[in-house]
Image 1: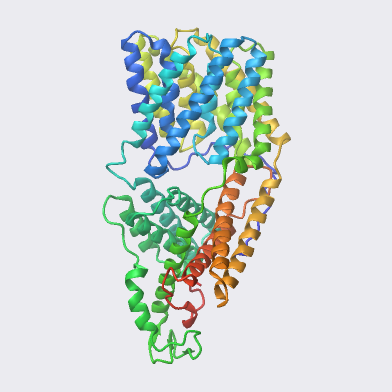
Image 2: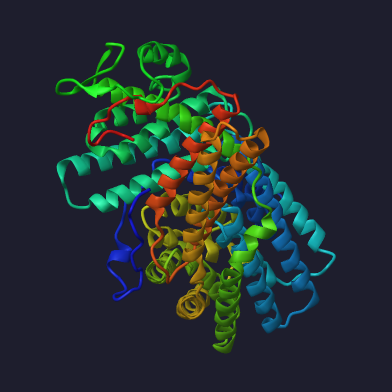
Length: 610
């Protein structure tokens, strides 16, 4: 277990310029950008042909679901997209019914804030991922302030549902061509991050801590992707799991890692060819057993014999590189078995995952409601812009929340200038308006990966252009209202983030780590005890597997909190690794897997992987 301890995340200086610095674009930035265009264009063009472009906001609600789940394996993506579409329809239904029953702005803002809180909590609990609740909140909040009757609501919901089905098909379209594309990308990112850390650690360069954190985060994300599908893994996914384990080995012993080899594997994984083999433990098990002939099971009698070598009682002579390679091979097989045991554990019920997120829901409801009320007090006609701005701010800590507020304000201010320039073109006709909306959709998803504010430059005119689908409106009024609501929403939302905190999130991660440690120690004792009953082994294995799953869920939930100690992400990954190997030992003890021998027969040199 790493001795790394979390450091304080309290803020002394809130950045401004740093928050606007551009980063590298995502490797697959074009996927969500093209997906959203493909999802929005056909319904919008069809409605334009029918002369009912005023209904396009409802089809666009369903089309925007194509932005989700691009990092999920396709089997998991199918389910996630379906739930996102249902969630979008549920929020839209509540908004349409509310708009039909009352035109009281205070009541509508309150309903919008409560919807935003529910959407935020559910998205965090289910770890839907970007763009998370923001799109859902935008759709439901905007619908609250569109004049509506109860008789119109079913038809509008049907349009949104039809567009949602089309968005689902767009999201799943690449599956026949690259059935393991998301898993390959996540694995390649983990390998590249591990290679970068190995180079930094080997060269003694500054920024090693940042490279290590980035590498552990990439490995953690890769495991999340690979474990998203809980059925029996395919041969390809098993090969990808071995590569992620190799990335973990590189993190454990960066001085012994080969960055060039890691990058070579990453390049091969990104393509469509065969997954590079790191050495299949099942195929090489016989060779390992032959090497171990003559060795005592407890390793007694092994003794160093010359530099870089060790002699065994059976006379076998193995150099350090061979020992390290064989040890990594056994470690890889052990962790694969442990991963399989973890995959077999059913996820926690949604209700139990929502409980710890109560402060998140309170914060979102309070911030969104106060932002909407403040906007109403200033005479705004569309207070949902302030509400959505507040909902979009909340990030992993107070510094990032502040950065998001800066990014949102700057992006929106530049965006309204872009809208002022684009509006005359969009008002040339329905086709020009639809094309401008499509261009803004593409630009937003293509740029948002470099920095949120850059994406907001396109999101702002997109939102303003959508309001013109039912009919053109004065550009000056739209620009003024958007600027005021942006400033109000950012200010009130940030104040709410500071006022309502959830300090228990970090402590839950520490408790989850302690639980995993205790469960691992108990399982190891049971596996080592020859008198242990099968029932005790099963109970120990299930208890440890459940503890590992809970640790990952707790760490993911805590990552959405702020004003707390930094999360010990490295300890989380190391605890998962150790637990996977112990799970493998319990499986072998039950006789479900042949015992390959113990790595204690080998003498490791300093710096070798344990």
